[in-house]
Amino acid sequence: MGGPPVPRGHPAESARFYSAVLGLPVALPTDGFVLVGHESSPGLGFYRLDDHRRPTWPDSSLPKRCHLELGVDDLDAAQARLVALGAVEADAQPMPGRRRVLLDPAGHPFCITL
Image 1 (cartoon, rainbow, N blue to C red):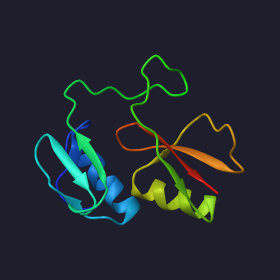
Image 2: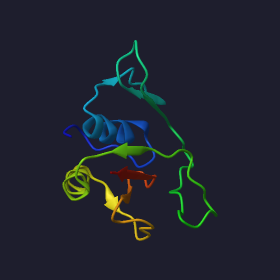
Image 3: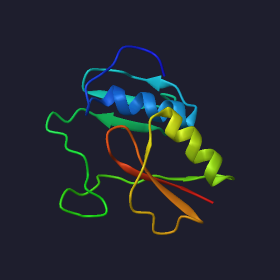
């Protein structure tokens, strides 16, 4: 994931992570918005939030803004790969044999699911 470090909450941080996770290019990078994907097809967009605070999932006092479910063939291998890319295993794991909850570098929860 090379390149210079970027501040937490900056769209480039999330874009670099999900680009590596999904194997998609970073497109349309600006200071306030970054798209992951191809300009002519669906992708993930990330906006700058100057007052970004990590969601407090599973507590909803600071709710998540979106949620991704990524289908995988092997939970352990996928989790190891994602942690190596910068994800962190969430403390709460409601269905660990079928689904793992991880947090991206900005603190947003997402799942890998069989």
